[in-house]
Length: 454
Image 1 (cartoon, rainbow, N blue to C red):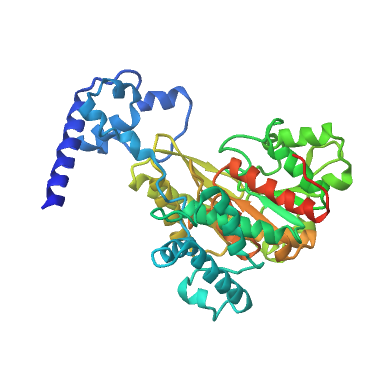
Image 2: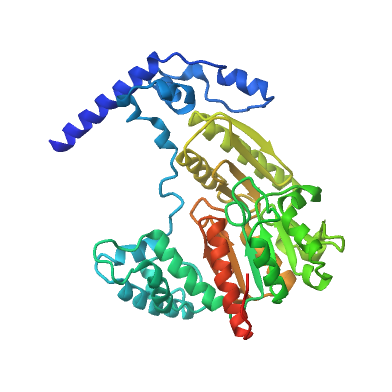
């Protein structure tokens, strides 16, 4: 009865908001004229002709900002802008979720003690371990993880062991795992790789000269650690666009007059696994010839199979976008195809498109990666797992000597594929990247008996 009453109130509130929005006079150009003014070419649309009256009202709330200020207080309560949230889709991981569930019957210390023991057992026999039975999707464990020590360290900041009513959340368990991992990796680190957007810099931005991460990258290079950016961004035959993404870093290399022996430790793996670049003596970038680094599996790909994959991916992206009434622009490149929304949308819509593409392209002749980029959805030839493996072979680095830092390890994220190749640090934004790399550098320098000064 209580649920029915609440549901009735919600329906009445939403109906009232829709009626108010329907009476609002919308000023300015239509979406169609706006697109024409910007010269955009859209190939899949959610046509207004197919909109129901209810759909049109919601679209006004979502896409006509000038109407918000004229809604009364009652309508503002149902303001559809709240639907643009990303929810918890960026916080999906069966291992972390299992650890969160354990806190219903265990203390934080008991959880970490058990999990540390199970991870150690899993590292010895991944197929028959207790952890495999409890969390079937868990991947390889490349290094020992001292979770109890990491918990005690994190507890100094978060008071997890003293809290009575608020259990550790997803991010806090992720932080404890990160601390344990960077402590383990510091002892033998020879290669660290970074995702770009959302990890080194904000989505759609670049590395600028004032960015704090530059100092950490230079310090890692000077500590005999190879540093690479492994990104979905791919610009076939065009080094200038790659250079533009890291212009601040390259400028720092030049201003510091870093010798070639140090800059040779820096690389970019673009297009997931399709383009490898290195630093030139003039502090620019150049492509590494494919025959020097590509794996045998990559060289076996046939161009006609790649074209077939991209065409199939294009069709499923456009069909799914059209079905979900999302107007998009198509972008097709040599080794990737993607869609860019031409109207505001919610994260869940992009997630559904990415997962639909993953499902449809399973079993394709050429490996691929379909992922939700947060502001777009792309399908790339190959994946970061193949790119990281090729880079590790090229630099002669073992899995336990590498570390990948990224922000998209969920089922629709393109960092997920790296987990079976080396240890990972899962960050939520560039600020977290800077923080954890600072801790890592302190550990590395402590082993050399010299303090690390940022």
